[in-house]
Length: 341
Image (cartoon, rainbow, N blue to C red; front, side, top):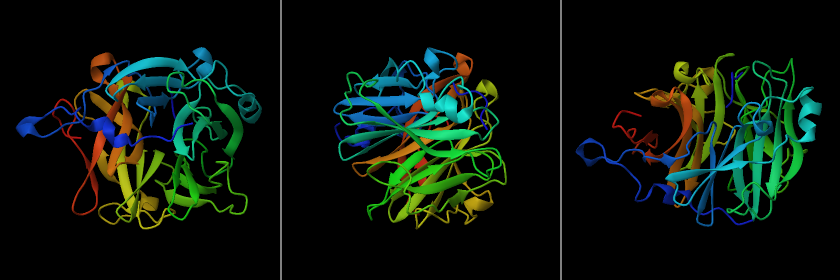
């Protein structure tokens, strides 16, 4: 229920943070200071060769509202790389009954030389929604907007359903299975099993798992990361997409099983509104959320957007290393200005 959403295997993403950290008081590292064109919403991130590729929600009624692309040689300095196409896939209008102002919340995933791109088509305040899939068998970091094949719809929702089919995030588990988490408002975050090769729903398993709920309140943007024998579910609580008035904040819970049940640090089930806060508004970093958690080289990374109070609430890209405590729970470094996460 959002307001306005403005071929090679991926290399380890932990390299993004090495040699790029600012220092806070007492020499403690902070989240990196990023530069260049950082305007993005609901970011997803992938490293291909030596290039970092980020995709985000399209700009409303600009370039067909298609997904925006940014690239970087080092994960620090970013350049706009245009859009993924100039028109939305034909199935979107047919599914929704109209062409929405923009596509939302992309998610990049690499497996076996193929890059999978999940994305959302929806209308504000409605759960007449769909998650689509594109694939690319040879993603060229010099031209990341090319080579994509649209695979159509993965999962849909409609009025009367208790979930909203947006905000997709895929995770493959060590047993060879693949899963898609998704959801926003309504009854919260859901999960379905995928065929790991096609990236589509697994026909043999139609079970819809429930992962997190706030009883119709704001919980969305799921992302799941496996670490140390647990699966960690990252979500965004509260108000998105309102610029300086945004109250988004990043929350986390964990489970021994990918399908849950997930609980927060205090043991409160995420299905009952639980969630431990990782980052909220501080200083000019307003409404952080729309996050994605990634793993590589033994390190975890969180990529997210915030609304910059110094830029009138423009959404901006930020990354942060996930630090794992002795208790197994993640924390983030302080923000670049030295404030708390």
